[in-house]
Length: 400
Ligand SMILES: *Cc1c(COP(=O)(O)O)cnc(C)c1O
Image (cartoon, rainbow, N blue to C red; front, side, top):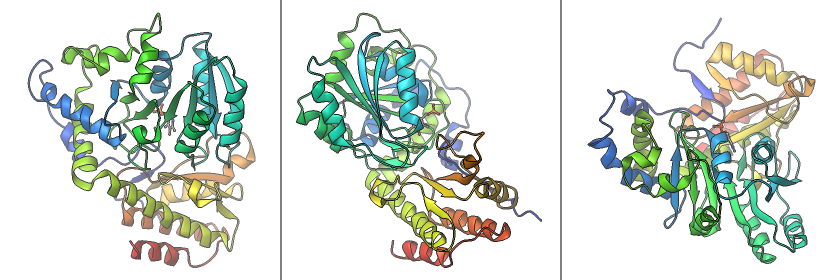
């Protein structure tokens, strides 16, 4: 028998669960794009977008694109073909940003820190110290790599760059972390940060955000050629409404984003949003620890302080993860995330990894529901696991 009829839960690390209020805000006829509500709301929308990134003094360009597009946009405005960047990879997403750079004719130095560990600031400093001619134009890192679920220390990398007085721009991919994990762009000294609408920002996929400071804009001014769609200048400093988007605006996405930012910035508050994600992540870890005491199941990232609060990658015996994903989908109405980048899809190990997305509009009962259904699935499938996981999870919620 199946028990999946009812409200589905897409528990993958993006797109995330969207609030009904966001969907309802989008449910309206096409607006006037020359005057009125849409035009009038842009100033506050941009301000609230900067608030989510903790960027009081910088700029943001909005693109009709996804996270991949923002990788390209960030580089298109700062680095010319033939120039060099340093990419710090801790999973698939860092490697893909490097691939984007290479495809743009940029030379890439890649430091890879593996799939279960964070960036070593000493290796970064050593690499930059050796670049005596300051050829490296930018250092690129991913804050939360969604494949491994590592959460890297952004200020530690800023400190490594400063320790060797290297002038490279510092760029951070916050697609998975923005609106979930603490990220303070200005205080932490990032020059460029990127985000997308469909993860912590709880809005349909299709909008990408590139944040930048004046130092990064100086690099933009130094480039001879930036393709008109990627040029952040008109989007961040528009002479009129039309210039924000260089064409028809993404009307309904903007209404949805407006509502999402009302909820994040003006109602719950960013600090509370971060605290909620931290507590819910801890709830999941408590359950995984208890399961792991009696079976082969563990978080991919061992140290707690290096774990994302938005996504958790879990390893178990192959092919149990695939069987479990199928079971909770068929029987319980929950979609769990597949393995990404930890094993090739053809490798049996691929079937021993799954991910729980807990980014954006998620609360205690949703997380307890996911954990309860995972345990039901392991029980039904006779996957061995330790006792007491749901009690341990409930105890974390009880302390909230
Ligand atoms: C999801 C994600 C991306 C890519 O976003 P798309 O919208 O799928 O192109 C990039 N970086 C990180 C860290 C992500 O989580």
